[in-house]
Image (cartoon, rainbow, N blue to C red; front, side):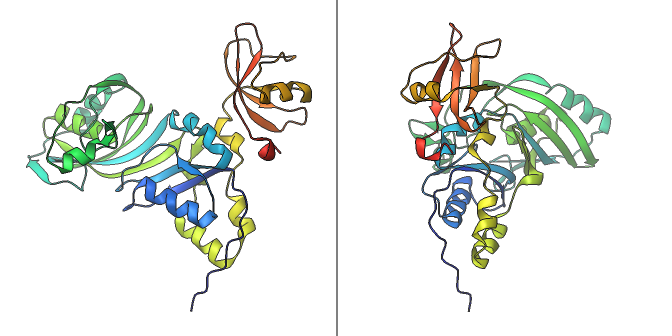
Length: 310
């Protein structure tokens, strides 16, 4: 009989890079990881469709203050696109709407993909978590209701053809937040004149994080079952990693006192331009995020709680 080892209760503050499996929602994956780590507060940083897999950064405790930085970060995906078939959801989970003969060449695909580089306009799909009047679009879609959606501008930094085999196209996409790869696949199918849907989708990067550093739910479960809580805790990265891309400023202890009271302070050296910065103490420890003001001071924005600062 498998007797689980009871997880000792400890505060959990940091970022876990989860490799989400197919078949569960991002919220379900978060709930499972939160239970395995025995964490009190947690949030994910950008929804992955249930059928999709890959990198899903999760923030725990004080790190949830910096979840928006990861939510706003660029993402990279690898998608397998099935040409010739359109579905109601833009992926394999929907009903087939139309099937067409596929007669395209690699050159035609390269040409079609080139038109999606840069800033493009995209209309969010009905089967998405985007909310209207507090209700996700997919809930309306399941009721047979189609709402008018405003198109919005997204940025495709790079789109690369990785493989092509008659009706199957594998692409790699690096894009801005808010990009729906399912919609991108459908638009590619429209451009090729044959229609398309996403057969497989995997997120391989989110901001500065890559899939190579992600851990599966199975691995978390194994460590918990074995009672190896030290190894389990070691998988949670420090909260600072969520904002590692920001320039750092060092604030003396006296200045930190005023920052934590909500007051801006002068520092010896600040970046040349306004913007968000990581606040470090004299020992190099992360204490939170501030913003450079017009008068070259550092104003507090999202400071770490005192009991988690060290």
